[in-house]
Every structure is written in structure tokens, then in C-alpha cells.
Amino acid sequence: MDLNIEQLKKKIIYRSNYRGTKEMDKLLSAFTKRYINELDKEDLKELEKLLDIDDSNLYNFFNGLDTDFKFDDSKINLMFKNFNYSG
Image (tube, rainbow, N blue to C red; front, side, top):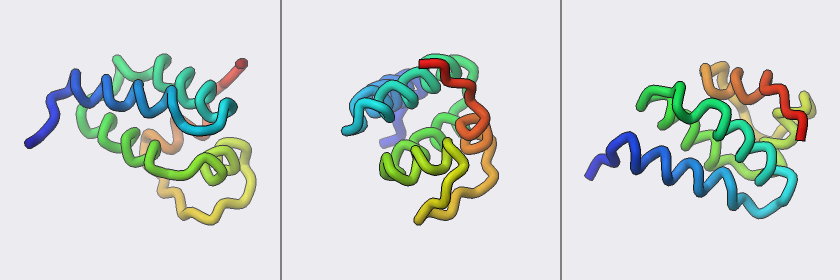
């Protein structure tokens, strides 16, 4: 069964807040809070894929460090990479 957009948003919000490391909880929570209501369903699905990536690789990608994961140039990945976090 396909999730409706509001269910998908709730799932993403929850997953962005409870990552496992406090740093990524804060970063992804701030990113999600900033953009969640501007994203269409396809963007939300891309964000959900981003949240499937482990914290270490996400942290390294965000900070321009080497990763063990190949990030594509999707809209969401670029938004995350360029997110101005001031936490």
C-alpha cells in the first residue's frame, strides 16, 4: 500500500529525529524541519532514501569528506550538502 504524503512526512520527521547519534539527530532534524513542507512526493521519497544512509557517511558527505557510499547529484542530496546548519 502506498503511503499518502502526510504519512510519508510523519515517517520522515520521526526518522530524522531518531538517528542514533546526537549530531545527526540535530542536523537531519533541522534540515527536515526547514524543507519538509516545500517538497513534493518524489522529493520526499528521495529524502527517505537519504535517511537510509548510515550516519557516518551522511556526516562525511555533509562535511565534504570521503564516504564509503556513492551519493548521486539528486536535488535532495544537493540541498542537504548545501544546507546551512547553525546548530
